[in-house]
Amino acid sequence: MPNIKGWELILILLVILLLFGAKRLPDAARGLGRSLRIFKAETKGLRDDEPAETGYGDTKEPRIEPRPIQPADPDITTAREQRDRSER
Image (cartoon, rainbow, N blue to C red):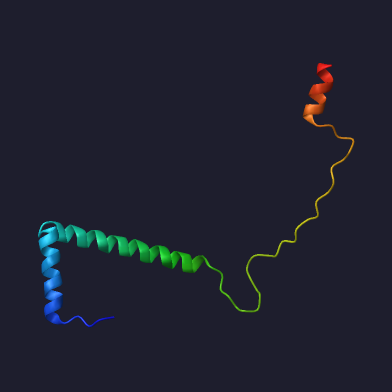
């Protein structure tokens, strides 16, 4: 990252002041502050929601084993087959 000297910082602030105007700068800074505050609160909330990683595979949620798929009963007829039989 380049070093910004004092006079370069003043020049940048002057350009920002000319672009936005003296009336809009406080509102822009206030909006930026609110956005950063909301972002900080949301990231803190995300960190609080994540379970602590111990490195040993322990998690708060139990592991769910998948159930095998059962084949369909061949005696069951579908709604379409029942409709076709009733139309005949």
